[in-house]
Image (cartoon, rainbow, N blue to C red; front, side, top):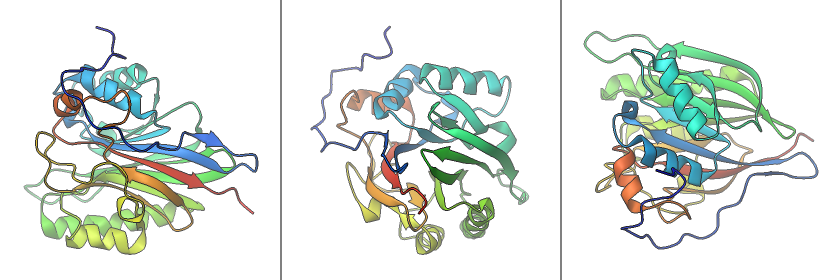
Amino acid sequence: MDLTEPLTEMSLPPLPPLPKSRTEPDGSAVVRVLSYNVRSLRDDEDALVRVIRACEPDLVFVQEAPRFFRWRKHAARLAAKCELVVLSGGATASGPLLLCSLRAFVERTEDVLLPLKPGLHRRGFATAVVRLGAARVGVLSAHLSLDPGERLGQAGLLLDRVAALDTPYAIAAGDVNEASGGAAFGHLASALQDCWAVSPWGGEHTFPAAGPDRRIDAVFASRGVEVLACGVPAGLPGIAEADLRAATDHLPVLAALRLPAPA
């Protein structure tokens, strides 16, 4: 099967145009970033690849990447099918993974394991510092706990880690595991821009994919990042509803962001 050909039995209304990736004459960068919980690639990988490729991302913030036998091979395969490369994370971050296009110049990467609470799943962050155009940006992919108390603490650790990246701009994205009215989500949104709330585009709810009724996945950006649009890309050219339902149990969040060049 040609992975560039989406399933067509279900159509979606078209979305308003989303800004394309570009570098402006002064070095400012318009970037597309995608956050996606892929459920360990247990679903329809071909559908997943079609969705990611249609989004044309510069950066992909993955949650629930494969963590066990030959996990690096699985991550590399997904990246190659999407015409991207592995940037950071995977099993060494307990699931979060970063992919990027060749547009990104990589300065450094670091995988972070969070404190383990007995009886709960180990969590971590995949982080990196990259340059896009003339802009330096720290990026972090996360998948927060199902336990409310631990989740709130992890939100604080996420903000600490973003600050430690020490970059002019930062983007954090992932599966928050609670709706936008929750304490952890609110803590993140108090320090960073909740991109969907700033410039909504496309759909809002991200889970479950078969009938989404809550927004538990999000893209956050530091102050100074210009949020052009953000939301679930249902209706984006090349994306079929059948693929969104088959790819995994979450819907993706796609954002177009502008990173101004340093003065």
